[in-house]
Image (cartoon, rainbow, N blue to C red; front, top):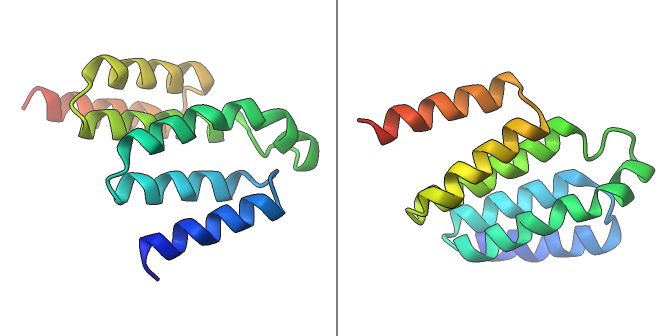
Length: 116
């Protein structure tokens, strides 16, 4: 499947099931991989605004862990854009959402890369 087709399918899935967090995270991953970094960042910023809908339909749908993963995706896109201020903010937001092992590992890895 190509990225363009994947984006169309995720848009359709979101339209049918707007409360499923997985479709949003997968679409954001495709946007980043496709190099549509600004679009990915904007899309990711909209996702937490929908968390009430997601949680009412699926308990844990927009869990702190899931929300932190969206902030990590924003950080990834910002890093690829060399926007290190937004990159740092996104990591802080990920930590604020859920200070889990994935977030701490990602921060250590990106810090290592920045100082290499």
